[in-house]
Image (cartoon, rainbow, N blue to C red):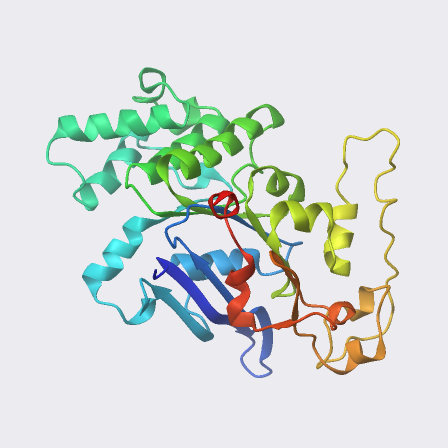
Length: 342
């Protein structure tokens, strides 16, 4: 079955400067399929500058890839016709980190919910439009009578964020890109938001790309996880397996920084990583200067992907005795809960 959306060896390089140009590689040869008929939540995790948001922007079609292709239903996204592009815009929706920046303070929230329905001709009458909006609000745990007719500043941050989810939902998408959707809400609403995302997968059949720096939330709601470091996927696979038993030294570093609710465990004592002062080799592993397991081969060339489990692959020479997995086959280790129970 052809996936709705596919990154195929996608890369993005940013350049700056007029005379002395400087290039920064934000994403390197990444392959990922989304919306292939099996709804799942795939988490993209990494520290700031790892390439998470760049991946989301490429998938949303906001920026062009420098290398590789973005495919929509098997067709190059940047070469499709206008009607196909419009359909892509309907089926692939986004939830951003700061909901307040999306709102126009001069319009009531009704306007923001109505515009996409009108633009994509999702209803024939005003009554149908109203029913669609109310159903979407109820689906994200909001009461229409307490939400509609208000201006953005009259709503809480959690309400504004859930309205953004409802706005995406009214268009009946197949994929939602959620970029740090809970970072701007307090802890009391975080669980509600995450539960809403799971409901979209389970009840609406929507696949979700969950972009976050928070491994704890990724662990609780995701089926799969991709760990990014300097634009490279260094570990990928089943979220529970990757987070509870991380294999790449960088994944271990991230997991070791999670403040697990264990009074007998001091924060960060599980993993202590020695940071070397050497300059990383242009041709070696980018994590080598920070890795406590660094070897000579790590400085000489970049590692390949090694499949260490049926649902996990790691880009690290520590596992070079395992079978090699081509980068464009990374989807073979990603599966949903549906796949696991079949």
